[in-house]
Length: 128
Image (cartoon, rainbow, N blue to C red; front, side, top):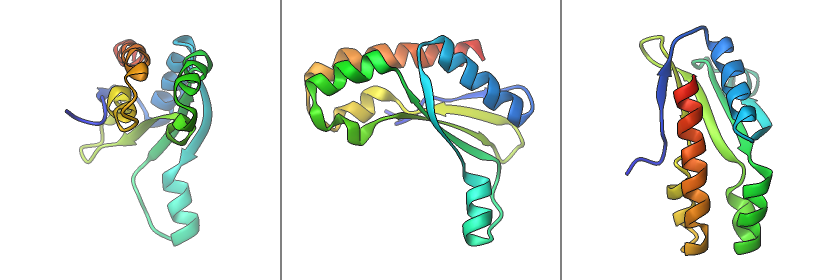
């Protein structure tokens, strides 16, 4: 099984990023961080890289439930959603597959949370 979900989305890169953030918010997620990988690599290394953003998304209610079941779950939060320019110029939105991420804990109490987050991420992708 893949560790991400993904969808190619029509539109300009920055517009897709904004639509993704909006859809995440509509699904109950806050975007806690927005890392511009292209700008960071240029600034820190002087290297050119494709347009690539990492959005750190968190659903507070589900994060709280998860932390109650597994205190060290914070090391895996927030759930990252990447938006990047593919080699062919298309824009790809790719959230982490939450059930794969949570499986590393070995805590079956997190299974339902992973399923719920996956459903929400699938809905976000469908709405884009």
